[in-house]
Length: 349
Image (tube, rainbow, N blue to C red; front, side, top):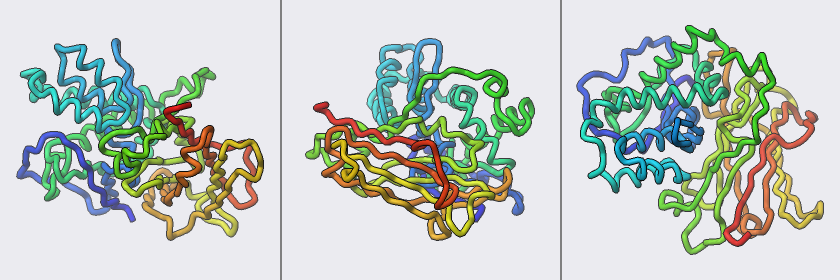
């Protein structure tokens, strides 16, 4: 299952190419990426990953890329930093086309390269996950983008995939198969991190209709970008799709924990905020072959499992509702506490 067939909805250039996306060795794994609910979405510019520059902090690489179109208009750039969802940044940039720098077309590749380098230099766990892809060909699968992606016929230039492979080669040359060594040498004190996985916008209206206006935000702690890539099991991604009140969860496992008579398991405890034990709802899911979305025989073996997490509206729109997600190597495995916490914020809190 080396090939992962996904489709992206990028709005970037629709230029065509008569050259195949990439000359592939049939023995080399291929990773297609670009849609939120499929594996390896962390490679997409839309993935939540904070990027800091000298003047701004962006919630994702797409926002930083879109803001770069307005090099002479810092007010517009500042407005883009306030977006929560990457698609909101794209929508804002599409409304301001008259303000895009006249030389943007000739600078978009080096800008994308700089943005991606910042993303993986500043987010150490994402850097490690990029290195975990080994020598696989990275292909940004997009039916609408034949410049940064593969295009609807697979003949696009795939500049984003090429940029990521170039950055991966850079890190390999200087770091080997590890990541930046400073965190391994010094205990770095960092504040708790979180990432927003849902916020009200046009793109998410199917998931949470506008007439339902109690929910302000869903966030997860720690941030998905900070999931420990070296762990035997970690949360690969968690996103909302179009199915109302359902989140799509992906878990990444290594070879040593992917099998066993008693696991691996995911335990989800939804705390309804009333302070009583009986108010909690606990669900345990054993990950099996029916949940397997992708497997790659690289970095010792990587297995990505997916399952839907169904939420109940009557609980989600309740004050202080939270969901605790714990990954267990086996049914009898013990953890000191939940590994991830979903936080639901209401407008009237």
